[in-house]
Structure formats: C-alpha cells, structure tokens
Image (cartoon, rainbow, N blue to C red; front, side):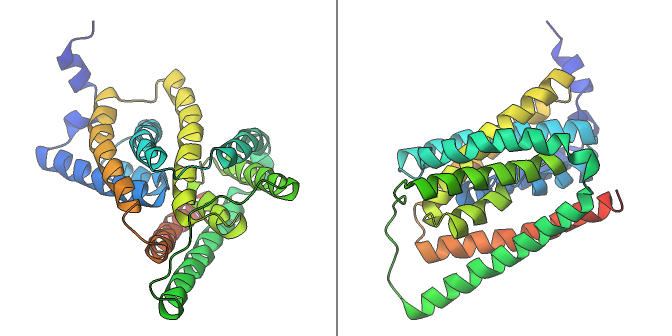
Amino acid sequence: MIPLLDVWSSSPLSDLSTVEIVLLSSLAFGVAYVSGMVGMALGVVRFPLLIAFGISVPIAAGVNLAVSVVTAVTSGLEHWKNHRIAFRVVLLIGVPSFIGAFFGSLASDSIRAWILLSIITLVLLWSGLVALARALRTRHTEKGRDESIQVPLPSTRRLILEMTVGFLIGVLGGAVGLVLGTVRMPALVNVLKLHPAIAIGTNTIIGLLVGASGFVGKLINGDVDILLIALLGTTGMVGSYLGARRTGQMNTNNLRLAIGIVLIIVAPFMGVRAAIEFPN
C-alpha cells in the first residue's frame, strides 16, 4: 500500500497553493456545469486551464479525459432519467465514430493537423452563429411556442445519414486527437435535426463512451494523477449534474441559444490549437 504522503508529494497538487487549488476546483465546477447543460465535454476548455496551472501535458491530457468521463456519468444519468437520450443515435453514431477514429489516427501523419483544426474552428463559429440566429429569430416570430421533444423515425436514409455523420466525425477526431463533442453537437442539431434537449443527452453519452476508450490508453501509459482526478472529478460531477438539471428547465430557444454561445466561445480555443500545430 502506497503511503498517503507519497501520493501527495508525487501529485501536481502538492506544487499548488491552497488558493490555486480552490480556484482550479471552482473553474472545473464551472466548466462541468456548462458541459452538463449543453451536452459537450468541453475538454478543449479544461485542458488549457490545467496547463495554465502548471500541470504537465501528459498528465493534463489523462486527467482531462478522466474528468470528462466521470462528469458525463452524472449528467448522463440525469438526461437518461428525463428521457433525453436517443440510444439508437448513440449506437449508430458511436460505433462508426470508433471505426472512423481508428482510420483517422492512421492517416494523421499524412494530413496537416492545422488545416483540419482551422476547418473545425470555422465550423464551430458558423454553427454557433447559426444557432444564435435561429434562436433569436424564433424568439421574435414564435413567442411562447416550443418544439415537441421527439426522435425522427429511423428510415433507411436516416440510418445511413446517422452512420455517415458518426464515421466522418470519428475520422476527423482521430486525425487531430480530439473527441470533438463540440462538432458532434451541431451535426446532431443541424444535420440530424434532433431536438436540442435530445441532442444534449445523446451527445453526452457518446462523449462518455469515446472519452472512456481514450482514458484507457492514458491509464496504461500511466499518464494520470489520482488526487487531481479525485478533486476535479468530484467538483465536476456535482457541476455536471446541476447543469444537466438546468437543461430540463430551459425551453428550446434558450437551449439553442446556450449551445450557440458555447460553440462561439470554444472556437477560439480550437483556433489556438490550430496555430500551435502550424505548419505541421
């Protein structure tokens, strides 16, 4: 059994002051709250925060995946209880995403990552603006109306579309090394035409599965820190649960508005990642 003192001394937390630990925990709570509310893991936001607090890149990546997984568990349970998950879509997008990620990772050496990341940045900006515009337009033209929450019927054409979307996002994610829940969300809403609440719950579960598979690799490589995961995972689980509860209290327009705002905020983070990768 490893002495508790040894675990603490080997943890990045031992290098942080009490104020820094409280601040990091609070920021993790806030990211998880928004994540649970809009159904996106937001690891692209959490990761640079960890780096900013002096956490090494390998450990930050492992902790980020672990926190994404545990926060998706609590928010996913809340979405499941309130029937906001389309399990057919989880299956038909999740499985092709795994396959696509494999092929994307194989092709990553022959594809310029900064080009793909730049495209993702533009897609996020455009999708965010479209979501904002639609929410504001609907608010002014159809005040008081709300869409019924339902999953479109599984026609052959739709099944093929769902599988194709999942595969393409998987290829893109595998090529750039990201889960891409932020790209999956506008695809669920704008391409597959899911109700925003259903898209949020469904994206949460897909992100949980993809994140868990990625964390296994980090665990095998030893790129994890138990104390950091315990701290940020605990605050994150509370935040994601409260955020998921907030989803059920918002109407369609406000959900679409929240998704649009988050996509626009996340886009610059992806843009910075593209700049770092340039000209590779």
